[in-house]
Amino acid sequence: MGRGKGRGWPGQERLAPRGQDCLRSALALAMGPGARLAALLAVLALGTGDPERAAARGDTFSALTSVARALGPERRLLGLLRRYLRGEEARLRDLTRFYDKVLSLHEDSTTPVANPLLAFTLIKRLQSDWRNVVHSLEASENIRALKDGYEKVEQDLPAFEDLEGAARALMRLQDVYMLNVKGLARGVFQRVTGSAITDLYSPKRLFSLTGDDCFQVGKVAYDMGDYYHAIPWLEEAVSLFRGSYGEWKTEDEASLEDALDHLAFAYFQAGNVSCALSLSREFLLYSPDNKRMARNVLKYERLLAESPNQVVAEAVIQRPNIPHLQTRDTYEGLCQTLGSQPTLYQIPSLYCSYETNSNAYLLLQPIRKEVIHLEPYIALYHDFVSDSEAQKIREFAEPWLQRSVVASGEKQLQVEYRISKSAWLKDTVDPMLVTLNHRIAALTGLDVRPPYAEYLQVVNYGIGGHYEPHFDHATSPSSPLYRMKSGNRVATFMIYLSSVEAGGATAFIYANLSVPVVKNAALFWWNLQRSGEGDSDTLHAGCPVLVGDKWDRL
Image (tube, rainbow, N blue to C red; front, side):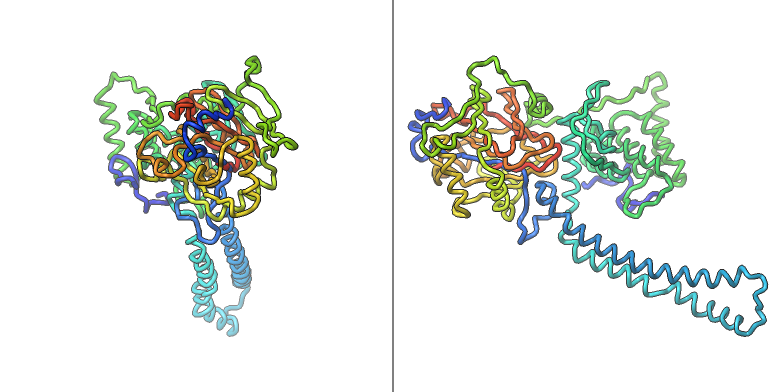
């Protein structure tokens, strides 16, 4: 029987699952001084937790900084395991010496049992030496030291919720970028459309997944009743387990039998009884005494016998619908361009220039501006911050990062459609932030001082970190923004504080374009129309980060 039985078997009798106009001066005047800059944002693509207090357990996956911090506990565990191995190596050398000594006596057919010295040592070995070998405290002391060390580190380790979050992130990347699960298991990022395979990213070093890795991803989907995602991951787990059957790995929690069992029931739930039967029969080859699986086989056979003329085709499993994401196809299509759609050079109104905004502050150091779109107006300001400024902002924010929330009426909620951590910085933290605010004000003509603007928000995205289509301005009168002196968010000024290898673009749904992450650049757009009404064309999203560490400053 495979390992991991304590978690319960799935199947027919399974247990319940675990469960610009650039300046729009008219708008600024119409809105009044209290609403001139309610949303100057800056985006960093990195994310972290508080070094002084451990990130909330279950939140590690939501920021790459927190994930990187998890390397520390693992390094400590490696040190513990190294000491354990050294202790065991010394103990095994001693056992080998004892074994060789006794074996040499048995291999010598002329060993004189009549020799009283030999007779004495034989009796002593059997009465004392073997007991000492078998009950040696050295082995228990070695493992106890390892266990004690692990228990000290355990509170700093990711929780099961992190494993679930990381698994859902892989499924999200699988969906948005149409990734092939078999390719992911080999460590490659390939988009599969029909018979065409496109390499999206080629890592310098391949990190392949094991059968147990794939099983855990599939089981997370399985426990949610999401068989669309569970089946391909469990299929890959079965394939990998078959290839290594008989090899016992200490770290694995699941086995071939576990994967077959879950996959069989997933196919049954998806309506493919034929596949469920085939996999269940294979399971019984490895575990013939499993009565529950035997009953499942009988049930599947009966179901097929009751419809002898029915052609059992492979079930077409529909991807789970996301009720709140009505623009999913457009959103994902824009993300799949990875920000590489062609620039419309034939439109004269889209141009590049050196921008001073007629402000003396920028005359000697104008900002390189690229107008990306007109309605809504979207501009990208290249090299708005320096590498050192971006680094400092990340360092200032990192200790204060917490799971990002969204406004839902009067509440602030953590949601699956926004995976990141964020921190709010006052410009009193460092004079550099004061200088940065002066630069933003000079470029936009907006007052970025509180209460006319929010404090600097720094965001670090997690594994597959994203923010599904949303507006930056408030759309409900009950939004907390309306209780603030600053009023609604007039504009967004987002600075990319890092680069990413792939993914992470900012997609504008109705404008039908995506803007890739450009390190140190700032993306600007107006959220409100001249009338003060929200501009629905600014619906935008942060595409999932495929590979990389994305930091934004908003």
